[in-house]
Length: 260
Image (cartoon, rainbow, N blue to C red; front, side):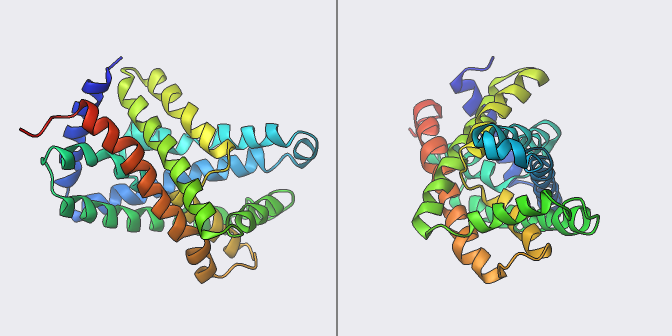
């Protein structure tokens, strides 16, 4: 297993590589990451959302089932390689602290990856899920609607705080994945924190780019503007804080290269 300092060294190299990608490469990898996260969301809906009787009697178990299925998306991102906005919220920070990369390079990557993730998630939501009618029948349709209605019903502050919790755990999952040296270890290391954040009901902006647009495509009474204002903006800001302040900064400060 790689120790924390070795993980930071791996993160540093990866961040420098990510910052050197061509725009086209970044967008393609970001599209793939958005699609992978959406596949995890779809699997979670089918397994966790497809158990209404169990949910009525054991709501905690169905939340766990939902959370247990979702991590397949991040496992794919890490194992096969893709650009995920939320993971990148922490990746670059140790290099920024040690002056190896400029904040402008970070913001450029975040912007491109965010756009690519959105396109990838929307593609799976519309073409792979909506047009194939995978979730059009009960109980899946009710699950899709209920997820989106719940996610757009909170105050800005609540969604923002849930966004912090989500990406704190997501970035720790990525960190743990880099600590492991074999594929099985990486999968388990990623699975545990991601399962936890989904089961707890935290808000992940890229996942919500799939869940809520899918509900809109399926006829839920949610407008795009309401989606942006009530969920995507506060969740995104919370994700940035969770990744930067609670993972990238402390681990970069404690184990990264010190400025001379």
